[in-house]
Image 1: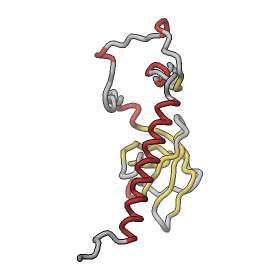
Image 2: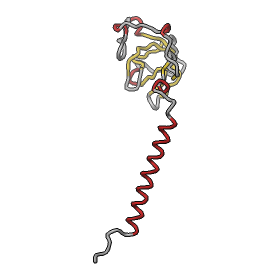
Image 3: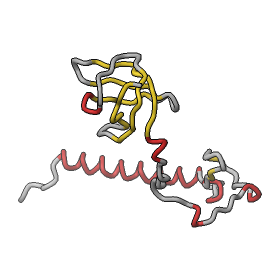
Length: 149
């Protein structure tokens, strides 16, 4: 007679599988029983006009209507710059001759604008009043054609 193919270890593994399957089925039944009173409407969430998640539907009186043509996708085009506005005035807040760069504070906007020695028409130093044009550099606005006033 041949020996049985089922070992003790195989029987234990089979028992564990059956127990897990039974536990899973019981949990499923418990979830079904606990969700008896809930409906689909109870699970819906709404977003109000301020972007907050609320349980009540939005108020139709606060509805806003937009024209499709008014919606701009992407970055809007800049208006043409007047050549008179291209030349600005400012004060040198920092400049280091050894490194060849510094910063100018624009008198109109108060922005700090980077200046490189290549953009200078004559030598500048800190607290000088200067006249310059703004161009775009690799990392942002850069002062070009800088000269003292």
